[in-house]
Amino acid sequence: MTQVNWSEDRVEQLKTLWTEGLSASQIARALGGVTRNAVIGKVHRLGLAGRASPSRSERPRVAMPHKPPAVRAHTPAAPVVEEDPLLLDDGNFATVLTISDRMCRWPIGDPAGSEFHFCGRSPKSGSPYCEAHARKAYQPQQTRSHKDKGRMAG
Image (cartoon, rainbow, N blue to C red; front, side, top):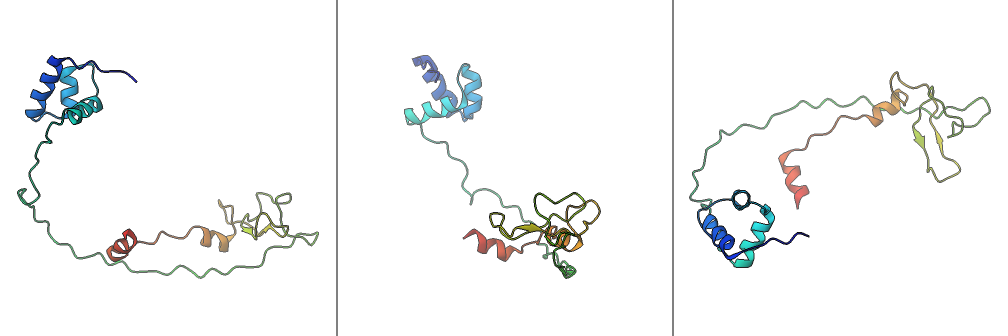
């Protein structure tokens, strides 16, 4: 940690610049060799009064035109019709050892369990999943209304 040399002259200069309303960054640049954070720390240690900013009631309010909420038509997604996982020629399901890039890689079951396997059906072009699992995996993001956002913030 670098120690800042606050001579009496530098402290007086800091006080003057602070009362003139300069920001901590501007004061740091004017003094040279100190950071904005060092200036803020010294201001607090000296107990210099915070500068008043106009209160909210004194600031002019800019009236914004009220826009009615946008109404979006909800188009329900096509129902997901899941098919049973594909049984391989040996009568087993696709596992980590038997899965290939020509098989749906949708996981089924608990990966820690012995019954864990993959769907194994033919994947949709450009996807690791079959049609049904691709629809399940890539659902459009739901938009929240303002009421929902307020409820979540509490």
